[in-house]
Length: 344
Ligand SMILES: N[C@@H](CCC(=O)N[C@@H](CS)C(=O)NCC(=O)O)C(=O)O
Image 1 (cartoon, rainbow, N blue to C red):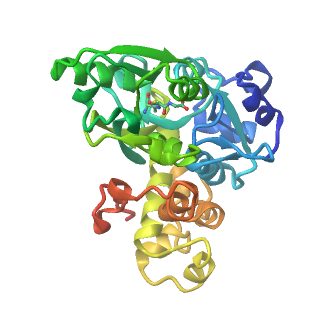
Image 2: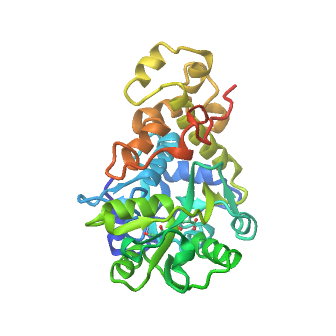
């Protein structure tokens, strides 16, 4: 999936105009994507460890990137029909509103302001994560209150700015905040001692710690600033497209719930163990036609990226260098908060 935008990711710029097929008046976004034969999905302005990273070969990898691939496969039959547009946290909303991207898959918190005032439409949560504070072990802090009067580094244009403010106000803790546009700048400032702590998304802080030369130099404090459900986002009113997104997320979870994997999906399709799996894999019609897609879309997605658990393990879980526990991102029958919708 090498294209001009991959190299732009490294430069940290956003490529517009040249790749944007204009959505005709009255045409739904799903039809525009099918006509363009390409999905425009978010990347990051640098590397967002575990979720959207550019590897040594200049290829995008990560949990969010796998969901972009799954969506491109569901709609267009191939993960190669995908263009990753690198945007900063703050750029993701203007980029979706102007039509420069089709979808935001970038651990984007579902908040009321974004959902209503920004004219966005959210999917059901596909990931859930807490915000924490990471500090230097040498400071000996046992909780956030021990960092009273300290400097906290945060990323501009993210929910963490508000979450930190709310937490500190509620708990009467004085602090100073320093905001950065890019994750690399934030990390550099922290390592250089410009801030006493980073307030951030738990999985990102864990990945940053794992990535550090000496992880024991850093400690993630136990206090939870807030818990945030992350959704996939498009423009308000793109209902057909949002149906596809929601059923794509559900199909990945349903596959995991039923033990359908990238390796055994062909076998499952040849000998479906239940009527609902017949429906999911398009053996009996409906799963595609009702969404304006082919009936084998879910089969193609599982064959391409695997089920939800396989994506998690490969990018941020046990099979990755980050080894983040599934925790709340387990399915309901494993103590987590995720569940598939009913495929009748
Ligand atoms: N869920 C957040 C985005 C995630 C987030 O806040 N990430 C920041 C918090 S520190 C981060 O990890 N930044 C590091 C980076 O961009 O590399 C939102 O929707 O605004």
